[in-house]
Length: 561
Image (tube, rainbow, N blue to C red; front, top):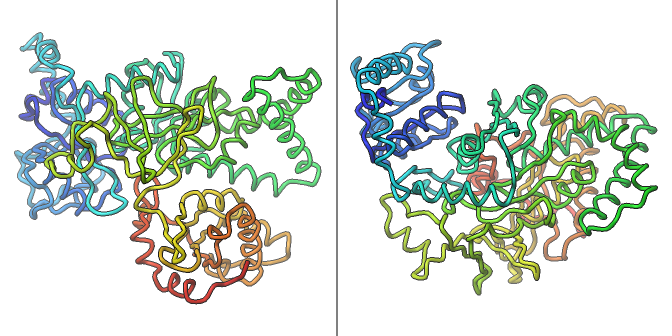
């Protein structure tokens, strides 16, 4: 801990970390926690302007940064470093430091660690004194929301908030020091941060994914027993499984369908707590041996429980994986609720819901359908924003989430959409776009979807395709596709997507149906600015970027019901 003392860090100071997930990130955070400094995590994908805003708003005086290359993305001579007067380079290799950085203000993490060891040797008991000075009410961290609209807000939480959270999550989802996790959720996100805390609190063995793109391969190496993830990872796995099945022989496709049918029957018995007939047990054993075991192996072979949060998970995907013997427990929460307020339990779950509230949490739905939460994990306030705090937490202590939902007779919460994202058609009908988007994405051809139509007579959608799936279909049909642009405009592809959307429309109310669509040649990405670092759509940016397409669809629907 002496190394942070040498960097001039004191209790209550804000220390920013601008880095991808790595072991050093975790250790830096725990060092801050032990001396009472507030970690201010910054997404590794953040732009210079986003980093500048967080550094300036938080008043961070120390910045841990991953590499010279990352530092070069900032403007060390301009205002982008805010009040930072000390920069610690985690990995100084592989690049040169930008000119203009004062030598005394920059040090490598290794150099700081060496100085810290010598300091600790001469100042025995420093760590114990610092830790003993902390109390649960002390501030812990400022996590900035990923900002789907507008500037991100700094959510201030205390040690007590996450102490409650660790106990409540442990009670809802039992785990032990025998569990293994693969950490890939960004530590700058509250869900990733909670997993990071749980690793130490519960003694998990953890591995770090090399990147979001290598998760499928990293699962095979780490072999997790617990998987904390956002829905996009499960959606991608769902799409890959269906693509591989579609590319198989007729016999393989038949075997898979039969196995899933058996799995769904077993899943139904388990959810309704009915006895599984002996004949079904035998066929299920065969389905596991011949089909499901291969899918389990793709997750590392030891997965006992998967958890989904951060965005809605399509009910069909949850039910599909349960039929394969993989239980995904969907949960819900916000940065402002220290990550979690609700979660399904292993012994009591309903697909399509986010489960029951954690013990100690209160939940109700307001007159306008907004979900309101109250409990020991509701944040202290927005940092340096008392007005925003008063707007978010009412006089009775209820936090207004901005999400629309409903609570069923058994107490399970179902989230339908963000209040700000609700579409109101010209006919006055309220439509939840996320529900329709999730339905569209259950088709193996559709990778991503964004539904629009506020104050319009009908809904429209921007669609991206699973390129591998479409190209595989093209080969079977004797079609040689070139570029993604060619795929997006090919008449046969347009006809197929039109029919697929028409079939999905049958599951919707008339006012919820998609009447027009455009296929985009490439997926929405974090790098392109269309997704947040946790893979949520930045609707405003996408709408602005494709406003010409959207205008065309609104004026002239591509197909009728």
